[in-house]
Length: 146
Image (cartoon, rainbow, N blue to C red; front, side, top):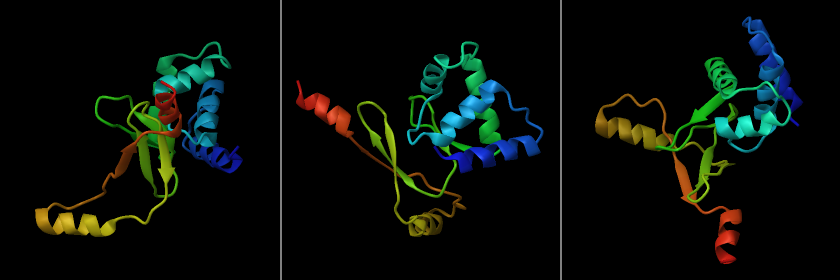
């Protein structure tokens, strides 16, 4: 469990006058300690067994709050549900084409691509998204078992 992330997140929210409810703390703890990139629905399903009075609206409202204060990042890919992760050091993602699971991987930031795009387009580039798609080990194994 990454207690350091959690403590920093709680401190940041409290310093900004955000009240720490049981639900908010549970969502924050889950995001601070998971290596997955859960959807709001996955967070809801995980927490419903632990908190009887949590709702989807509570999940979405808190995700919006955490995003506002820079604690989490939201990743949207086409029509699929957004995925969330704790805001941490720069990294890229590998995405499973079958189940949508995301995994982090570290690689030096490709700044030269941004510079090249800026030079060719005249746009002022602020960031880039780069992801690699494939099939995760679980989905690959499931396919091999048919």
